[in-house]
Image 1 (cartoon, rainbow, N blue to C red):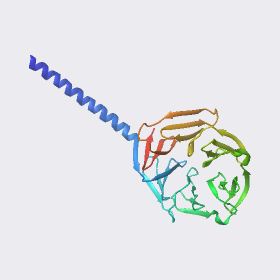
Image 2: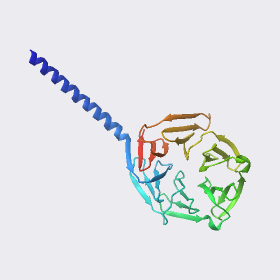
Image 3: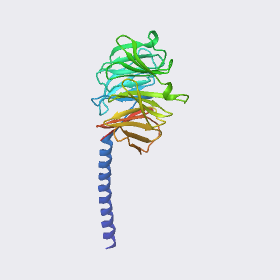
Image 4: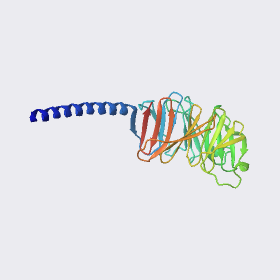
Length: 277
């Protein structure tokens, strides 16, 4: 009788362990299928196009294009190795790449072949701190030489109009790190004061009080940003609410984060992490 009880108990335990192992193995497999890590050494920037493709650059100016699930599609290698200051793929047809240290930009086709490029040295631009492509395919620039926001015509390589920013900043310190046009407004990131919003004529409209972030992206009606080490920030463009939440309590080496209907794409120092919904 004593032996039977021990035998019955062990059998039950083994059965429970087997079922538990099966359950947790299945759960882990399901979770793993939603999470993918791709090694990208010295990753610097990330952008999404309208088709759900993911573009990532590294410190040498190389760009890697992946589909929404992490399959590598194309690679771009610049003629000169240089850090990319801004990478924007939202247009899908033209991918915009700005090299501040070289004072030039490159337009790439969707297969990451060069469509056009220009160095600002022989133009009326003094020193472009920021540059991005507008919806009209001309450029928005912040020119350090005369402290102004400019619209630059890429066909004729000259400034269309400029808006002095002295009255906005005055004597305040500023640290402009990012620029992006979205839904008929221009958004300029100043780490010290927040995100500055302009209309498409360069008129200043308001400030979104999100400080100490490097850059941002957009998803539907929200401005999305990441604050180190682990905070996702979203600002609703219509009800003006700011939401902050802790994300992925893992090693704090996140460079940037973007998201779309497919999920979240987290760029770390040496890898791209994909979390699919």
